Structure formats: structure tokens, C-alpha cells
Length: 103
Image (cartoon, rainbow, N blue to C red; front, side, top):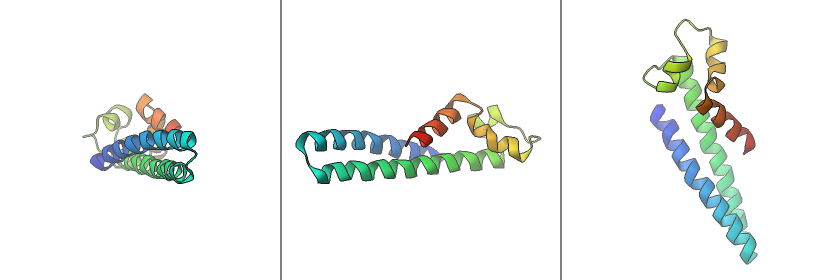
């Protein structure tokens, strides 16, 4: 599950870079097809971020301590509600949540 989250973040990074370039170039050339392609890349980036967030939540709820973030912010004795909220307990999870909210 951790590999899926990392892969989704990497694909999302490339998609967001493409979306920025496509929107800028499409606006400069006044090419509606390129602008639409950039918009579609933004939606695909949102899907990738959602996959990454769900993957991290699954790791947190399962208490998969092979992942450093999970080991630092949860424990087996932690109630389920606190494990759920552990997503934004650390800086990396908070940034992921805020990025997801911004897209």
C-alpha cells in the first residue's frame, strides 16, 4: 500500500507539472485543446492525491509500522478516531491534506 501511495504522489507531481505547462502554453497560443488537456491533467492529479491519501489512511488504520510516518504518529493502543486523525498529525500528512483541499 505504501508503494501505491508513493507512486500516486509521483504521478501526481508529473501531472501537475504538465497541467501548469499545458495551461500556460495553451493560454499563450490561445489553444483551447491544450487548455482542456491541462484541465484534465489537474483532475487526474486530484485522483492521484486522493489515492495517496486513502493509501496513507489505510496504513494508519492498519497500524503498518513499516512506514515511518505511521510509526511516528500512531500506536496500536490508539483509538480508531485518533488513528484516522493521525493523517494530519505530522507535517507531511498535513501538507498532503492541504494540497488535496487546494486542488
